[in-house]
Amino acid sequence: MADVILDHVKKTFGKFTAVADADFHIRSGEFFTLLGPSGCGKTTTLRMIAGFSFPSSGEIRFDDWNVTTLSPDKRDIGMVFQNYALFPHLTIGENVAFGLKTRKVPKDEQKRRVAAALEKVHLGGYENRKVQEISGGQQQRVALARALVIEPTILLLDEPLSNLDAKLRDDTRSEIKRLQREMGITTIYVTHDQAEAMAVSDRILIMKNGVTQQLGTPYEVYYRPENRFVAEFIGKHTVLPAVIERAEGELCTVRLQEGSRLTGFKKHAASGVTYKEGETLLVALRPECIEPAAGREDNLLRGQVIHAEFTGMSANYLLDVAGTVLKATFVNHMPDPKSIGQSYGVHVPRERVYFLKGEA
Ligand SMILES: Nc1ncnc2c1ncn2[C@@H]1O[C@H](COP(=O)(O)OP(=O)(O)OP(=O)(O)O)[C@@H](O)[C@H]1O
Ligand SMILES: [Mg+2]
Image (tube, rainbow, N blue to C red; front, top):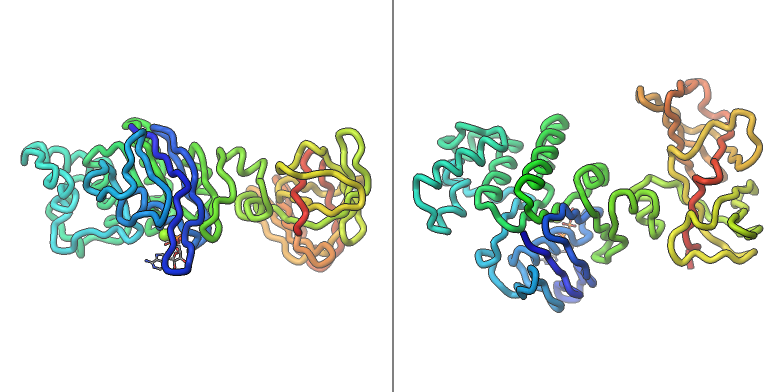
């Protein structure tokens, strides 16, 4: 087990900055996820931790050990690459054994450990198959076995489930989490899927255009997003601009652009939000925080239904509220298919209103 420290790490390609200022401390044994949309710098960050590329500036340490410019084979890491990177001319067994061979592990022990690693990813007995003879999802699991077999102190996984079907994805996800817990490996996981990140991680680092947006537990990034990007990316918040009408005591009442008013608690806000009457801020509302109005007149929003769907567990609505699309999810609710185009009122409980800083 080892801590992984990125100390003001920057990576540029010519004039382009792929990673601006990665500065965080991953704790020993932690399941840590880098999350963000395509191109935000996740793979670039992981490759620097692995040693396949070096930072333009800053330092990377495993505990007190400065590994910034050390080659990958000297770092005791296991890595699953985004494109698996299996050796096509080797068998599955030889692929998995690769790291053991370079570490000069005796032949019989290699054999035993390869068999056990393949067993762990549900590919027991596949040793003699060729890479071309197995599916993409199976190749992805071979890549995982190859990373695990060396029992690394640090495990780096770049979208390791991207090519699996929904069922296998869920199974493999639980399996990775179980192995990580059992073996106590510091794990750095890359994904652009926020639900996947929420499900497996101790903490999540959210990135956009190479810049860290927020670092926190799944609970923190979901319930206390620090900015609009995190709010929309993680909690599927609808973000509406508003003007502060009253800010007294612990409450704040704002007026939305279409004229309706919402009251919320000042403390339910991102850091740095200030309350001054007449100033603008953003109101962020998660779909499941919204309820059918059912006769209520306070904290009421009215919009036109533009979409209604029933998923079994919930009914999802899209409402056009003065040009902004508001997402609402009701549990145990049967939508009326005739509701499209109709005016519909929704209520937002005070304790569910969340404030973000107004945009400059
Ligand atoms: N070797 C390189 N030379 C120039 N630009 C690069 C290089 N590698 C990555 N980039 C750029 O850096 C940015 C970040 O790339 P990176 O692969 O880290 O993204 P990512 O977050 O892993 O995306 P994805 O989810 O699509 O895998 C991208 O704009 C990419 O085009
Ligand atoms: Mg990538």
